[in-house]
Length: 323
Ligand SMILES: [Mn+2]
Image 1 (tube, rainbow, N blue to C red):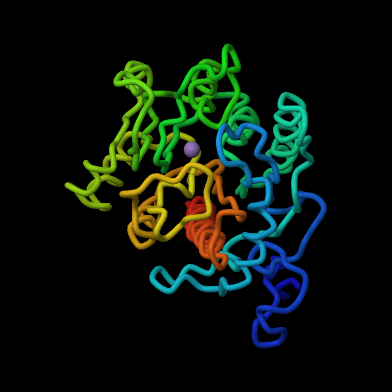
Image 2 (image 1 turned 180 degrees about the vertical axis):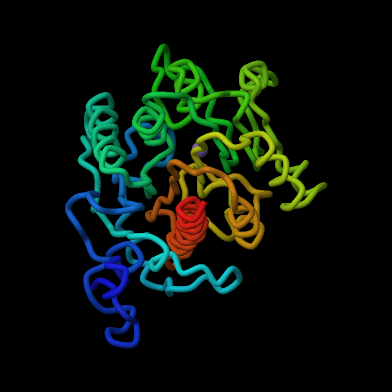
């Protein structure tokens, strides 16, 4: 369905077709095979080839599509109507390779590069967190970007099982080494849980990454922390990566590496809303692992966080068009 005035794709109307009916797409938007003509492209990355412990995030996109049918058209606080402000559709799942890690990364990068070349902002649903590395290779091809990273883990480890350099615990170290990320414009929020080594976060800090532990968030507030995040990324192009395991496992149990003591869904929503004004050039929601989920709760959380991101990105696009 398209809006007669704007020509923008529209979700299937829940008053015409009940929200539980029909073929599941992200936000009940049309599936379109290409990002041509879109302002924002929603896509799935059914791949967890970088997972070191409990696999299952490859099943994330399908379940997030299902739960995203619960989303309606208007953000209840900001009153943002993303589907009116921007042309948005579901471009399907990226091509992946479940048994070859490097080929998997190459395919994911190629898929996102196509979206970027079409002029659309990529908003991906993972997949494990290693999928953010090829996303950054696609969006930061010509200049490094800043990063606002919500996660229980820093994901800046070096190697695993010998000299394996590519896991969902290493994407941001690789991205910095590859010149894709400006570490001084990078903040990680919600970091917690036991670590392998007391110096585990030293490398990240030495690069200039702001590593913000969960305990510091609790002592401050979403408003205060996000003011710092916006200061760190400034006016430059910024990627936003939302690992669902930043949320407490009592609210988002369906993930491979849960850590207790996390954000409430309400705190996470508050933070994403405070991304207003950030120049977001790409974003993702990763690590939803349906085999560990209960009643679709984590997939619903992932879908809702994607909707929150969509509202902020669409509003930013509309604002920059007016400027
Ligand atoms: Mn992560």
